[in-house]
Length: 438
Image (tube, rainbow, N blue to C red; front, top):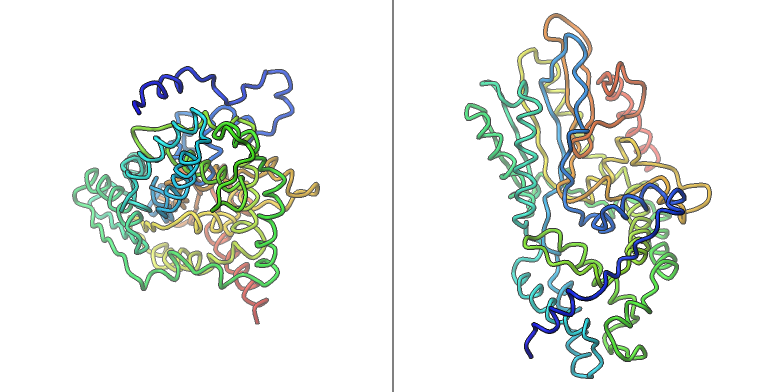
């Protein structure tokens, strides 16, 4: 059948995203307002990297100081979903419903869209997309522009390391291409190896306590039925709302799978939007559920300590450099969202490790939003400063996704902290955790 009538229908369909009136918006959480302004934020870790804006200017270095070293951990850029079944399972449901004759016009259009999306993902699952590659080109270019004292000197040394996953390797390559273009004299070393996995992509599940593991299994189930109500979504796709697919345990499975594909479409250009399938309220509720799951799994309890080896590597590498009077360069590490999130909590970057709200996880969205921490391309940069002349403390400031943030303790001035204070604090924190394991 010719798809033109259905494509015209899509253009004519009223936008299903609920546009709430200004009245009452004062009661919204900050996250509710942010997702209202940009529905793509509801995609959690699928959010395409939000480049810094003119408002995200950096605070000048303290008088007499200059940057000389940058220590970094970054997530790969935007990608395809990691399993073909993420696409083909949806397609199978729609194909069986077509045979049963129960697809609405919007359901038939989604079938066509999923055929296109599924075919485009064949043998590309998990791969870096062109959107993701471009993200790291921009990040690399900004590194050189923001910190020329580090990246644009003849003596600059850059040690870049990646997990063994292709999308991480290519993200590293994209950033380093820009750094090489900005400074052809820089000495850039790239490495990827199974031997680096223990700190670049630690096996986190083996390091959690039994209590944490039990809680992680319970929370998704508890909150799934609170926030995910697929009845209206089901009716948009199927003329018979009592129809059930033989391979689906419950209708909410189709809703969450479609939402994942919908959220991840921002990883691609041209962009194929599926947001007309979901109201704004449904997207927000789906996000609230995922936000709770990510918090429990990766940012709370003992989960941050899964990145102990990574933080120890950051400290040990800095120890080899901060004593030098002449070194200029960077250590760049490339990995995954499941490392960026707990590392942010372990470092106690602002807003990344709150206590569970007294009112319970239902109000987590008031204090914590996952998409602010680990979008595609997310990164943590620790920038080290030393006196241009004479002696003085080594200072550090932290950037979360290239925006200045705070760390534990009291800064010397603005966002600048004494490195020795931070170093001692983190080492004591790690030692106290390890003592609980004995």
